[in-house]
Image 1 (cartoon, one colour):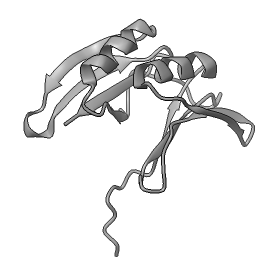
Image 2 (cartoon, helix red, strand yellow):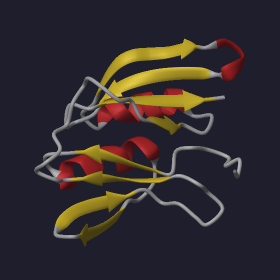
Image 3 (cartoon, one colour):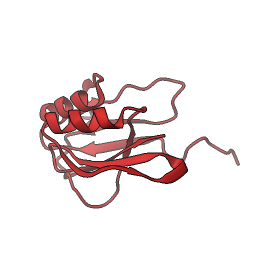
Image 4 (cartoon, helix red, strand yellow):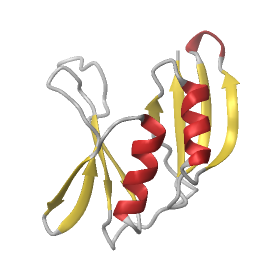
Length: 124
């Protein structure tokens, strides 16, 4: 059996309004999301490369509703957690948990995005 770097390969963050959600995540992360329609469903895809094992997307699928409860996806704030939190608020999000040390593992925070999802942010 192989020993993968990560068991996580893909994540989807549900949204009701793909354009509003994409604007929020682009503002918070300082990156551009690629828009496309896959199997009839609008997506806004986070940039990734062949060197990265994990990718993800915002998805406006009527079968999946945004939620502040349940599974939490953590985005890598790449050493810029405070800036991400500031931009999240400026883009219409809410800080649910400010920067909180988790010891040697780094620092985390939670934001509520414009769709109502609770999303974790992490930096080492």
